[in-house]
Image (cartoon, rainbow, N blue to C red; front, side):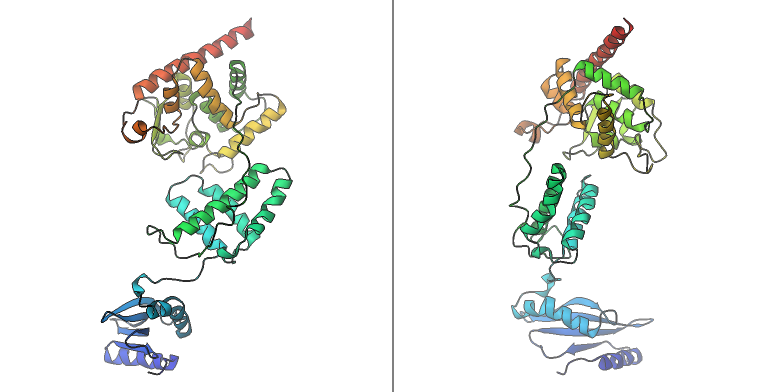
Length: 413
């Protein structure tokens, strides 16, 4: 059988338009095994032409669409058939499971990883996308992901580390390692419909050491807690009102910064005085009763038109980011007007002072939605502990009110 030509295709399109009968135009030999075929069909208002990979296997004929003519030209169809189907047919495998065999680029890998984070509803996807975009620009977006070597990543990270940004250097290494780990797993993940196979032989970031994890120990004393809380009530510099209120709410409830920053109007139950999250960092739903001071604070805030209690100063359609809150606190502590504290220090302070207030370790863990790893908690215990959490928050509320009142009395004296 002679090879197909564009002239033969145009003639076939005219014939089918006149006769109204379907024609299948094979491209070269291959009967009995498989070949490229153009299926020309008459439709009520037009004639369609579709490229098919055709296979004979176990006495049965199977077809799989490659593309439509003329958007997929004859030359392109031949290239795709040779690349994705010819070897499959020759080895006797089914073309039903054949797909695009082109190896993915760095851009394909990073975009696929970010898409996987988004589909899993991971709040970290925005930061990962931002970081990986910069990394892709340096490594080369169009380079094959499998060609990136460890030495290149080291040279990418080294200047970041050299200028003192050790945490950022560790983040860059982490982003790359996570993306490559996903790419290697996606090769064999039957749940994934990734359009690319990366054929990554190894993770180039695996051998690069991580920064030693520094376990924080800082927590605020009662005096420092009151000092920071009072400053947030009346800052001595112009500040977007949402920022100090968000920090106050973190101090009063001990919740994660991201979860308070993204508080929406539909998550606050004013009647029950409960903040309810359907999904959190550990992917578990979480509801926490708040102390009276926190309830009064929330009620004093009017959510903006987009439903955010703590909107971004730059874009009211989005909530304030945890990085912005960190920067806000960092700038003030550098001025010496507030005690030194990071966002995590505030969460640690709640854990410590609530313990001093008499709240049990188990209830403090549940109030802060820390994952409980014992078999009973993970697999069997489905009680919501709301009465116990309310009692714990009441103890904490009384403790905080006493701290603030004692400080006020001392100041008056």
